[in-house]
Length: 391
Image (tube, rainbow, N blue to C red):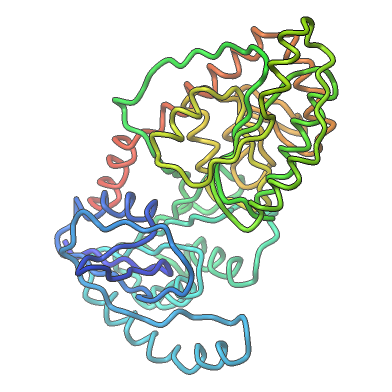
Protein backbone atom coordinates (compact mmCIF):
# COMPACT_ATOMS: atom_id res chain seq x y z
CA UNK A 1 0.00 0.00 0.00
CA UNK A 2 1.18 3.50 -0.86
CA UNK A 3 0.69 5.83 2.10
CA UNK A 4 0.92 9.60 1.68
CA UNK A 5 1.29 11.80 4.78
CA UNK A 6 0.70 15.54 4.43
CA UNK A 7 1.72 17.67 7.38
CA UNK A 8 2.96 21.11 8.41
CA UNK A 9 5.40 19.35 10.76
CA UNK A 10 8.87 19.64 9.20
CA UNK A 11 11.12 16.65 8.49
CA UNK A 12 14.75 17.65 8.88
CA UNK A 13 17.95 15.98 7.74
CA UNK A 14 20.67 15.45 10.34
CA UNK A 15 23.78 13.29 9.89
CA UNK A 16 22.17 11.53 6.90
CA UNK A 17 19.07 10.68 8.94
CA UNK A 18 15.54 12.00 8.67
CA UNK A 19 14.19 13.34 11.95
CA UNK A 20 11.27 15.39 13.25
CA UNK A 21 9.58 16.56 16.44
CA UNK A 22 9.95 13.64 18.86
CA UNK A 23 6.26 12.98 19.78
CA UNK A 24 5.33 13.18 16.08
CA UNK A 25 8.05 10.66 15.19
CA UNK A 26 6.86 8.21 17.87
CA UNK A 27 3.37 8.21 16.39
CA UNK A 28 4.41 8.14 12.73
CA UNK A 29 6.74 5.19 13.38
CA UNK A 30 3.57 3.18 14.08
CA UNK A 31 1.99 4.27 10.79
CA UNK A 32 5.15 3.47 8.82
CA UNK A 33 5.31 0.01 10.37
CA UNK A 34 2.09 -1.00 8.62
CA UNK A 35 2.45 0.66 5.23
CA UNK A 36 4.39 -0.32 2.13
CA UNK A 37 5.72 2.69 0.26
CA UNK A 38 5.48 5.90 2.29
CA UNK A 39 5.81 9.52 1.13
CA UNK A 40 5.63 12.74 3.13
CA UNK A 41 4.68 16.13 1.75
CA UNK A 42 5.93 18.68 4.27
CA UNK A 43 8.43 21.49 4.93
CA UNK A 44 12.08 20.49 5.32
CA UNK A 45 13.28 23.64 7.08
CA UNK A 46 12.49 25.10 10.48
CA UNK A 47 14.03 28.23 11.99
CA UNK A 48 13.35 27.61 15.67
CA UNK A 49 14.79 25.01 18.04
CA UNK A 50 12.92 21.72 17.97
CA UNK A 51 13.18 18.62 20.19
CA UNK A 52 13.79 16.03 17.48
CA UNK A 53 14.57 12.35 17.08
CA UNK A 54 15.19 10.18 13.98
CA UNK A 55 12.52 7.94 12.49
CA UNK A 56 13.04 4.22 13.14
CA UNK A 57 12.26 3.45 9.51
CA UNK A 58 14.24 5.77 7.23
CA UNK A 59 12.91 4.20 4.03
CA UNK A 60 10.44 6.84 2.91
CA UNK A 61 10.33 9.70 0.42
CA UNK A 62 10.00 13.37 1.32
CA UNK A 63 8.47 15.85 -1.12
CA UNK A 64 9.53 19.25 0.26
CA UNK A 65 7.20 22.24 0.20
CA UNK A 66 7.74 25.69 1.60
CA UNK A 67 5.91 26.60 4.81
CA UNK A 68 2.83 28.71 4.11
CA UNK A 69 3.17 31.69 6.42
CA UNK A 70 1.08 34.84 6.68
CA UNK A 71 2.51 36.58 9.77
CA UNK A 72 3.90 39.49 7.73
CA UNK A 73 3.41 41.04 4.29
CA UNK A 74 6.52 39.56 2.63
CA UNK A 75 5.85 36.02 3.95
CA UNK A 76 2.21 36.28 2.86
CA UNK A 77 3.16 37.39 -0.68
CA UNK A 78 5.68 34.57 -1.09
CA UNK A 79 3.16 32.04 0.22
CA UNK A 80 0.43 33.28 -2.14
CA UNK A 81 2.81 33.05 -5.11
CA UNK A 82 3.75 29.45 -4.26
CA UNK A 83 0.19 28.18 -3.69
CA UNK A 84 -0.43 27.19 -7.37
CA UNK A 85 2.78 25.12 -7.42
CA UNK A 86 2.00 23.55 -4.02
CA UNK A 87 -1.49 22.65 -5.22
CA UNK A 88 -0.06 20.79 -8.23
CA UNK A 89 2.46 18.91 -6.03
CA UNK A 90 -0.28 17.92 -3.58
CA UNK A 91 -2.69 16.77 -6.29
CA UNK A 92 -0.07 14.66 -8.06
CA UNK A 93 1.04 13.05 -4.79
CA UNK A 94 -2.55 12.33 -3.75
CA UNK A 95 -3.36 10.85 -7.16
CA UNK A 96 -0.58 8.26 -6.79
CA UNK A 97 -1.41 7.25 -3.20
CA UNK A 98 -3.63 4.43 -1.96
CA UNK A 99 -4.24 6.08 1.41
CA UNK A 100 -3.96 9.82 2.12
CA UNK A 101 -3.33 10.86 5.71
CA UNK A 102 -3.65 14.56 6.61
CA UNK A 103 -2.25 16.05 9.82
CA UNK A 104 -4.32 19.06 10.87
CA UNK A 105 -4.62 21.90 11.68
CA UNK A 106 -2.15 23.96 9.64
CA UNK A 107 -1.87 26.08 6.53
CA UNK A 108 -0.52 23.29 4.32
CA UNK A 109 -3.19 21.00 5.78
CA UNK A 110 -5.85 23.58 4.84
CA UNK A 111 -4.64 23.62 1.24
CA UNK A 112 -4.55 19.80 1.21
CA UNK A 113 -8.08 19.62 2.64
CA UNK A 114 -9.30 21.62 -0.35
CA UNK A 115 -7.32 19.59 -2.89
CA UNK A 116 -8.60 16.25 -1.54
CA UNK A 117 -12.16 17.28 -2.48
CA UNK A 118 -11.20 16.63 -6.14
CA UNK A 119 -10.34 12.99 -5.35
CA UNK A 120 -13.51 11.56 -3.77
CA UNK A 121 -12.63 7.89 -4.42
CA UNK A 122 -9.29 8.00 -2.61
CA UNK A 123 -9.20 6.51 0.90
CA UNK A 124 -8.38 9.25 3.42
CA UNK A 125 -7.88 9.80 7.12
CA UNK A 126 -7.31 13.03 9.01
CA UNK A 127 -5.69 13.42 12.43
CA UNK A 128 -7.04 16.71 13.81
CA UNK A 129 -4.63 17.37 16.67
CA UNK A 130 -6.13 20.68 17.74
CA UNK A 131 -9.15 21.63 19.81
CA UNK A 132 -12.27 20.37 18.01
CA UNK A 133 -14.76 21.98 20.36
CA UNK A 134 -17.51 23.70 18.30
CA UNK A 135 -17.46 26.65 20.70
CA UNK A 136 -13.68 27.17 20.73
CA UNK A 137 -12.33 30.53 19.59
CA UNK A 138 -9.90 29.68 16.77
CA UNK A 139 -8.24 31.25 13.72
CA UNK A 140 -10.33 31.37 10.56
CA UNK A 141 -8.06 28.86 8.79
CA UNK A 142 -8.66 26.28 11.55
CA UNK A 143 -12.43 26.72 11.43
CA UNK A 144 -12.39 26.52 7.62
CA UNK A 145 -10.57 23.18 7.44
CA UNK A 146 -12.82 21.75 10.18
CA UNK A 147 -15.87 22.65 8.09
CA UNK A 148 -14.44 21.27 4.85
CA UNK A 149 -13.33 17.99 6.35
CA UNK A 150 -16.49 17.34 8.36
CA UNK A 151 -18.73 18.14 5.37
CA UNK A 152 -19.62 14.72 3.94
CA UNK A 153 -20.76 16.27 0.66
CA UNK A 154 -17.33 17.80 0.01
CA UNK A 155 -15.12 15.26 1.80
CA UNK A 156 -15.89 11.70 0.83
CA UNK A 157 -14.33 8.38 1.88
CA UNK A 158 -12.66 10.07 4.84
CA UNK A 159 -12.32 9.48 8.61
CA UNK A 160 -11.84 12.65 10.64
CA UNK A 161 -10.14 11.67 13.92
CA UNK A 162 -10.65 14.17 16.74
CA UNK A 163 -9.89 14.36 20.44
CA UNK A 164 -12.96 13.97 22.63
CA UNK A 165 -16.64 13.35 21.98
CA UNK A 166 -18.62 16.30 20.62
CA UNK A 167 -22.39 16.62 19.99
CA UNK A 168 -24.03 17.15 16.59
CA UNK A 169 -21.10 16.04 14.44
CA UNK A 170 -21.21 14.51 10.95
CA UNK A 171 -20.88 10.74 10.57
CA UNK A 172 -17.22 10.90 9.44
CA UNK A 173 -16.07 12.55 12.72
CA UNK A 174 -14.68 9.88 15.05
CA UNK A 175 -13.30 10.22 18.60
CA UNK A 176 -9.63 9.28 18.79
CA UNK A 177 -6.75 9.47 21.25
CA UNK A 178 -2.97 9.52 21.62
CA UNK A 179 -0.97 7.04 23.70
CA UNK A 180 2.39 7.26 25.47
CA UNK A 181 2.70 4.09 27.50
CA UNK A 182 2.58 0.37 26.77
CA UNK A 183 0.40 -2.30 28.37
CA UNK A 184 3.51 -3.64 30.07
CA UNK A 185 3.81 -0.30 31.91
CA UNK A 186 0.45 -0.82 33.62
CA UNK A 187 0.70 -0.95 37.37
CA UNK A 188 -1.49 -0.02 40.31
CA UNK A 189 0.08 3.19 41.63
CA UNK A 190 -1.14 3.85 45.17
CA UNK A 191 -0.86 7.41 46.45
CA UNK A 192 -0.41 8.35 50.09
CA UNK A 193 -1.89 11.84 50.29
CA UNK A 194 0.31 13.07 53.11
CA UNK A 195 1.64 16.59 53.45
CA UNK A 196 3.42 18.31 51.97
CA UNK A 197 1.15 17.76 48.98
CA UNK A 198 3.21 17.41 45.81
CA UNK A 199 2.14 19.25 42.64
CA UNK A 200 3.76 18.72 39.25
CA UNK A 201 3.79 20.81 36.09
CA UNK A 202 5.16 19.23 32.89
CA UNK A 203 5.41 21.31 29.73
CA UNK A 204 6.66 24.54 28.25
CA UNK A 205 7.03 27.40 30.73
CA UNK A 206 5.15 29.90 28.59
CA UNK A 207 2.31 32.39 28.89
CA UNK A 208 -0.06 29.99 27.12
CA UNK A 209 0.45 27.35 29.82
CA UNK A 210 0.09 29.74 32.81
CA UNK A 211 2.62 28.01 35.11
CA UNK A 212 2.53 31.01 37.47
CA UNK A 213 -1.00 29.93 38.48
CA UNK A 214 0.47 26.82 40.10
CA UNK A 215 2.87 28.99 42.10
CA UNK A 216 -0.05 31.10 43.27
CA UNK A 217 -2.05 27.99 44.20
CA UNK A 218 0.76 26.37 46.21
CA UNK A 219 1.51 29.64 47.98
CA UNK A 220 -2.15 30.08 48.88
CA UNK A 221 -2.40 26.51 50.19
CA UNK A 222 0.58 27.08 52.46
CA UNK A 223 -0.95 30.31 53.69
CA UNK A 224 -4.12 28.37 54.51
CA UNK A 225 -2.14 25.86 56.59
CA UNK A 226 -1.88 23.07 53.97
CA UNK A 227 1.75 22.26 53.29
CA UNK A 228 2.42 21.96 49.56
CA UNK A 229 5.30 22.01 47.08
CA UNK A 230 5.46 22.44 43.30
CA UNK A 231 7.82 20.79 40.82
CA UNK A 232 8.27 22.23 37.32
CA UNK A 233 9.56 20.00 34.50
CA UNK A 234 10.24 21.77 31.22
CA UNK A 235 11.86 24.91 29.91
CA UNK A 236 10.59 28.04 28.24
CA UNK A 237 10.59 31.83 28.10
CA UNK A 238 9.11 32.18 31.60
CA UNK A 239 11.75 30.08 33.39
CA UNK A 240 13.87 32.91 34.82
CA UNK A 241 10.85 35.04 35.63
CA UNK A 242 9.28 32.17 37.60
CA UNK A 243 12.49 31.53 39.51
CA UNK A 244 12.62 35.17 40.57
CA UNK A 245 8.95 35.10 41.45
CA UNK A 246 9.37 31.94 43.53
CA UNK A 247 11.95 33.63 45.77
CA UNK A 248 9.50 36.44 46.46
CA UNK A 249 6.75 34.18 47.81
CA UNK A 250 6.78 33.95 51.60
CA UNK A 251 5.46 30.62 52.86
CA UNK A 252 3.80 30.39 56.25
CA UNK A 253 3.96 27.07 58.09
CA UNK A 254 1.23 27.64 60.65
CA UNK A 255 0.15 23.99 61.00
CA UNK A 256 3.62 22.46 61.55
CA UNK A 257 3.43 21.45 65.20
CA UNK A 258 6.94 20.71 66.48
CA UNK A 259 9.81 23.14 66.22
CA UNK A 260 11.95 20.40 64.69
CA UNK A 261 9.52 19.64 61.84
CA UNK A 262 8.90 23.38 61.37
CA UNK A 263 12.62 23.96 61.00
CA UNK A 264 12.96 21.05 58.54
CA UNK A 265 10.08 22.28 56.38
CA UNK A 266 11.55 25.77 56.26
CA UNK A 267 14.80 24.27 54.97
CA UNK A 268 12.93 22.60 52.12
CA UNK A 269 12.13 24.73 49.11
CA UNK A 270 8.56 25.24 48.01
CA UNK A 271 9.26 25.48 44.27
CA UNK A 272 11.62 23.28 42.26
CA UNK A 273 12.68 23.85 38.64
CA UNK A 274 14.30 20.96 36.75
CA UNK A 275 14.23 22.10 33.11
CA UNK A 276 13.86 19.51 30.35
CA UNK A 277 14.41 15.99 31.64
CA UNK A 278 14.47 12.46 30.12
CA UNK A 279 11.19 10.55 30.15
CA UNK A 280 12.36 8.19 32.91
CA UNK A 281 12.96 11.14 35.24
CA UNK A 282 9.52 12.56 34.48
CA UNK A 283 7.91 9.15 35.07
CA UNK A 284 9.41 8.98 38.57
CA UNK A 285 8.22 12.52 39.21
CA UNK A 286 4.66 11.55 38.27
CA UNK A 287 4.85 8.61 40.67
CA UNK A 288 5.89 10.92 43.52
CA UNK A 289 3.31 13.62 42.78
CA UNK A 290 -0.22 13.86 44.18
CA UNK A 291 -1.62 16.43 41.72
CA UNK A 292 -0.73 17.50 38.19
CA UNK A 293 -1.45 21.01 36.98
CA UNK A 294 -2.14 22.45 33.52
CA UNK A 295 -3.85 25.82 33.14
CA UNK A 296 -3.36 25.95 29.38
CA UNK A 297 -5.26 28.37 27.16
CA UNK A 298 -5.38 25.93 24.23
CA UNK A 299 -4.81 22.19 23.77
CA UNK A 300 -5.71 19.32 21.49
CA UNK A 301 -5.01 16.17 23.46
CA UNK A 302 -3.36 17.43 26.69
CA UNK A 303 -0.60 14.83 26.84
CA UNK A 304 0.70 15.97 30.24
CA UNK A 305 -2.76 15.42 31.74
CA UNK A 306 -3.20 11.92 30.31
CA UNK A 307 0.33 10.88 31.32
CA UNK A 308 -0.07 12.12 34.88
CA UNK A 309 -3.36 10.24 35.20
CA UNK A 310 -1.55 7.03 34.20
CA UNK A 311 0.41 7.30 37.47
CA UNK A 312 -2.59 8.19 39.60
CA UNK A 313 -2.04 11.95 39.84
CA UNK A 314 -5.23 13.94 40.32
CA UNK A 315 -5.24 16.34 37.34
CA UNK A 316 -6.14 19.99 37.75
CA UNK A 317 -6.71 21.57 34.35
CA UNK A 318 -8.54 24.34 32.54
CA UNK A 319 -11.64 23.10 30.63
CA UNK A 320 -10.06 23.39 27.16
CA UNK A 321 -10.69 20.96 24.31
CA UNK A 322 -11.60 17.46 25.57
CA UNK A 323 -10.40 18.01 29.16
CA UNK A 324 -13.88 17.87 30.82
CA UNK A 325 -14.49 14.52 29.08
CA UNK A 326 -11.08 13.22 30.22
CA UNK A 327 -11.70 14.27 33.82
CA UNK A 328 -15.27 12.96 33.96
CA UNK A 329 -16.69 16.43 34.60
CA UNK A 330 -20.27 17.12 33.55
CA UNK A 331 -22.18 20.37 33.18
CA UNK A 332 -20.94 23.25 35.29
CA UNK A 333 -19.35 21.02 37.92
CA UNK A 334 -15.74 21.78 38.85
CA UNK A 335 -14.79 18.39 40.24
CA UNK A 336 -15.36 15.17 38.35
CA UNK A 337 -14.80 11.49 38.89
CA UNK A 338 -11.23 11.74 37.54
CA UNK A 339 -10.04 15.28 38.18
CA UNK A 340 -10.65 18.96 38.86
CA UNK A 341 -11.44 21.84 36.50
CA UNK A 342 -9.31 24.93 37.13
CA UNK A 343 -10.87 28.38 36.89
CA UNK A 344 -9.57 30.39 39.83
CA UNK A 345 -6.88 29.85 42.46
CA UNK A 346 -9.31 30.54 45.31
CA UNK A 347 -11.74 27.96 43.97
CA UNK A 348 -9.08 25.22 43.73
CA UNK A 349 -7.72 26.10 47.17
CA UNK A 350 -11.18 25.60 48.65
CA UNK A 351 -11.69 22.27 46.84
CA UNK A 352 -8.31 20.92 47.95
CA UNK A 353 -8.98 21.96 51.56
CA UNK A 354 -12.19 19.91 51.38
CA UNK A 355 -10.37 16.94 49.82
CA UNK A 356 -7.65 16.99 52.49
CA UNK A 357 -10.36 16.13 55.00
CA UNK A 358 -11.64 13.33 52.72
CA UNK A 359 -8.60 11.19 51.96
CA UNK A 360 -10.79 8.36 50.71
CA UNK A 361 -12.33 10.63 48.08
CA UNK A 362 -8.85 11.68 46.91
CA UNK A 363 -7.83 8.04 46.64
CA UNK A 364 -10.97 7.28 44.60
CA UNK A 365 -10.34 10.13 42.15
CA UNK A 366 -6.72 9.00 41.81
CA UNK A 367 -7.80 5.42 41.14
CA UNK A 368 -10.42 6.51 38.58
CA UNK A 369 -7.90 8.70 36.76
CA UNK A 370 -5.43 5.84 36.59
CA UNK A 371 -7.99 3.30 35.41
CA UNK A 372 -9.19 5.64 32.63
CA UNK A 373 -5.69 6.42 31.37
CA UNK A 374 -4.71 2.75 31.34
CA UNK A 375 -7.29 2.16 28.61
CA UNK A 376 -5.22 4.20 26.12
CA UNK A 377 -2.11 2.14 25.48
CA UNK A 378 0.34 2.10 22.57
CA UNK A 379 -0.91 -1.36 21.64
CA UNK A 380 -4.51 -0.16 21.38
CA UNK A 381 -3.33 2.92 19.47
CA UNK A 382 -1.46 0.76 16.94
CA UNK A 383 -4.48 -1.52 16.53
CA UNK A 384 -6.66 1.48 15.66
CA UNK A 385 -4.08 2.69 13.12
CA UNK A 386 -4.08 -0.75 11.46
CA UNK A 387 -7.88 -0.63 11.20
CA UNK A 388 -7.69 2.78 9.49
CA UNK A 389 -5.10 1.61 6.98
CA UNK A 390 -6.97 -1.60 6.17
CA UNK A 391 -10.47 -0.15 5.91
